[in-house]
Image (cartoon, rainbow, N blue to C red; front, side):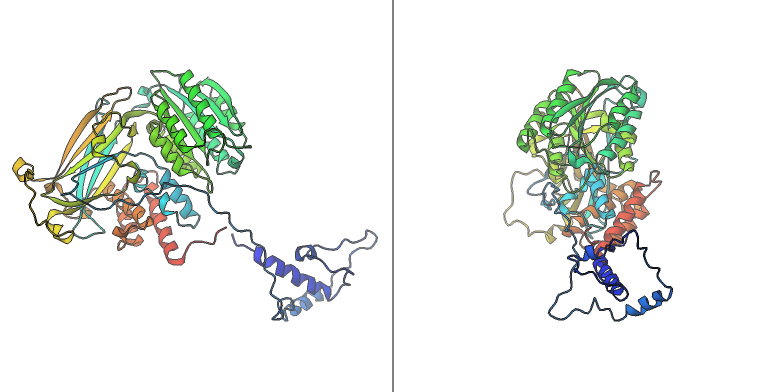
Length: 568
């Protein structure tokens, strides 16, 4: 939509000048251009004089001299008032990208899985609005894990996920390889899933009024209500200046009652988020069902500024409540006040997951289509540890997961919290590795030998690039289990084109996210290169997510050429 505001004062002044040629002037000059544009009141007894047709030709001719625009040098032209765009108060975790690590110095990499998708939807919204997203808002793993992938599927819930790997050439660094690690969760059939005991905790503060906030969430929650089974239970807690229970625990059989309460929510007041969390968890614990999945779903646009406001206290509260068996999901909405950093801290501390709702289609994806993977956990505290073989790999770099890194000793410590996986969830991780043959390009060899280290050739594992271990707990259990997977050097694809569509598409998304973050590793891999790689790996794309991604890449490419749109 074209903006005409800057021309309005000049046009109004020009019309005044033209009118002055044929009508008497008022005895008092107008005090403001906007006031001058208003027609003078006409007494009822004196009808306005008709305008002769010839006057139109005279008016057109009178515009040429443009007397209003002919300002003398000493008088500056009046500038239209354009309200500045308020500075964004969005907050994001500030983490630098992972660097390359020498295998000789640190052969083991450990991280917690992440199934959040908030970063992707936020980036999409910014690009759709003609703006480049802040680098801190881009998290590679959340971009990659936004998409469904057709990875190998486990056959039973006792081993809740399958692990598959692919090795392929790096498209952005000649001579390097990518190790693609995929986890696919066991998918619970709808009829077999446990009951759900859900507390919707809804921010109804004044800032939630715009259509992209509470009204959008209400549409999503109506879709959510339609998915409920008769034996599910839902209650609704709201918070603004204070907290209130808008709906006592109600059976999914009574969908209309749930929807009526959702429809009657209105935005006003402050943001007592901390108090709201306390009330919601109390509600969930009061109706706790050990045979059900008990979860609090928080929907908000920003900071908690009333009640518990210290992020450390909120985090401690969530950690304590994690032990109660109540899970946490957070859905963020809106722009300008989104505290993504706090949302990340809370979900990572509370057996939770986070999403960002920017459109009704995203609400449908998160609250209807992916209800099973969002709501029903199949594995808790899922950790991945990768040990690299120094005889095959000189250096490695984990692409993304900067906020999910763990210490090596955390892997076997069952007290250390990690990410959870829901039914049917997929998790993708990508390592960029430098083969041992190229070690000389990275560092000079050591002058002094390091005695006592057993070489891979001596252990009979010389053909392994790395060894992947995944540790997890089944829901309700405190002791972890472990699965292992060796990655053979001989399994490497000769070309990137030879890799499956899913793996190549994930690589394209990872490249795009790194480029948006300004990471130098992909500086020579253009947006055009990324779009072509993604387009060639779209596959079936039943929901059109991959086609949408290609459009996002093209938008970023255009913005990098012409610059971001004017701030509105």
